Length: 108
Image (cartoon, rainbow, N blue to C red; front, side):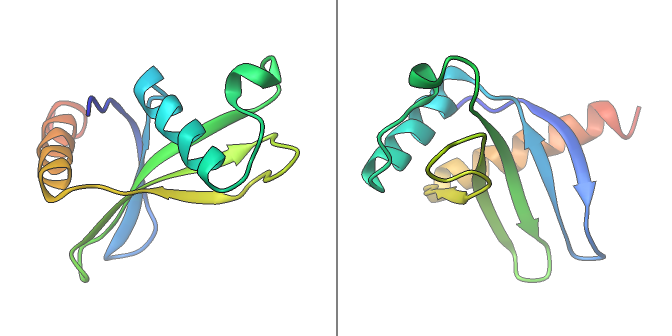
């Protein structure tokens, strides 16, 4: 899974989230998750009136990492939050991508 981080938000001493660029791969995953949950409209159906915010949610104390998205502008599920299931390998890859992003954007 190709992930491009955009912004980092620290919510407390142990958790926060990183906004992720909305790639075609992530949009397709989100559309399929919403369809599986009975939603009939996808991004392509909404002519720019609906979009997704993707983010990687983390908790360092619980050692938890979740990929989530929020639907913005959806008639059926506006502001509803969904999770994208990640394999252990996906999580490991995302952690390394996040470390590279932090090194480039925070440490430099």
